[in-house]
Image (cartoon, rainbow, N blue to C red; front, side):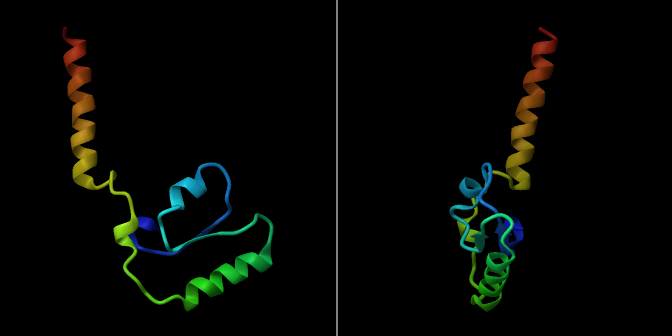
Length: 82
């Protein structure tokens, strides 16, 4: 959702709060609370459409992932034949 700028509603469990802390379209609500979930949904629906893409940490672009994966495979191949 973050990579395409969609809003996110989630519960603050595990690493979710840290993952979403810089993403302005994320709303964290208490688990098992339909009232807070509906309030979060209304908040997102009423929010102006802003460019949130600049807030996303970008280590997962296709180019970065390709280069990172290539390094891992190159190292594995090199170590295997030494």
